Length: 124
Image 1 (cartoon, rainbow, N blue to C red):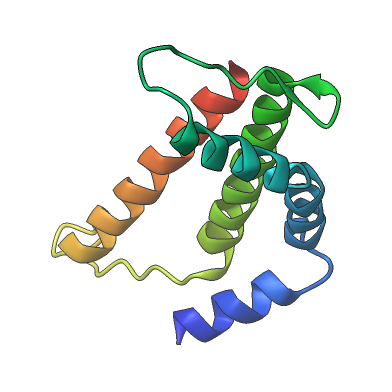
Image 2: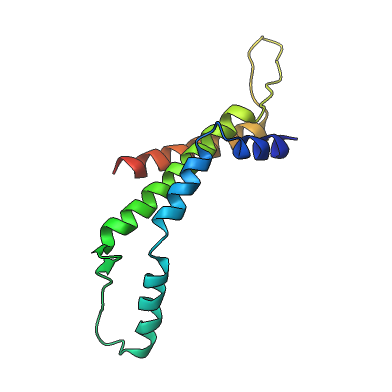
């Protein structure tokens, strides 16, 4: 049930997921140039180190950073949608405290940990 709800929420145009996907498509433009560079390394000697310095007439580091930012933004947006859309049920206990059951708690901890990692990456 949650999978279907999440899938329909991802496809909903009001979420920022579609804009994030477009940003990733735009950021992955110089992929062919990088693939040609990597296939060219097969021909050359492995004794020397060769760095990829430019992609699409821009520094390769900037292009990679742009791709990484687009990917982390997409993952962050998808994680936020999942936390909003997916239902979590908390069973009550005898002392009126509410605790999530272990699988739900672990899943939420995992999502929260992933969100913290994404936020840490996007801040750097």
